[in-house]
View 1 (cartoon, rainbow, N blue to C red):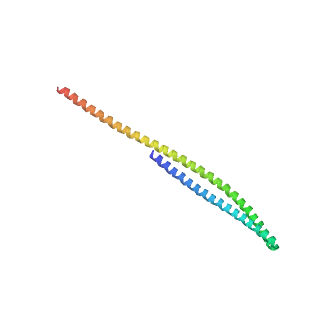
View 2: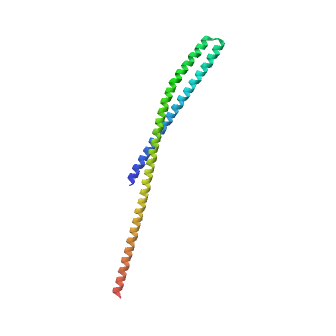
Length: 160
């Protein structure tokens, strides 16, 4: 039974390591999603800044400044759309990593419960064995004492 518990303990440790690995992967994916969100936000700000520069150039009659601002706005829009696609992909990967982490956490919890249950059963069984051995010793001692008493009584009857 001890070897079975040791095997289960090693297996539980392995499940915990796998859970930790999935947790780390989830953290990496979450960080990647945040980075992509930040990049999309920066491109939106760049586009807004370009629009403001374009309006300013129009008000001052600066055609070259307006064209540069228009180009900057279009470029920021293209980059933002590309980054939004990357963001969607990363969110999907993040969702998959989350599902994998939750599944590994559930498996580890199940393994932990199985281990604890078997350990408790083992402990109860060991206590029963110890009690049975104690009972056997008590009964053996009692039989021996009764036999000794019967022998003495038999000898006393012969003597009288």
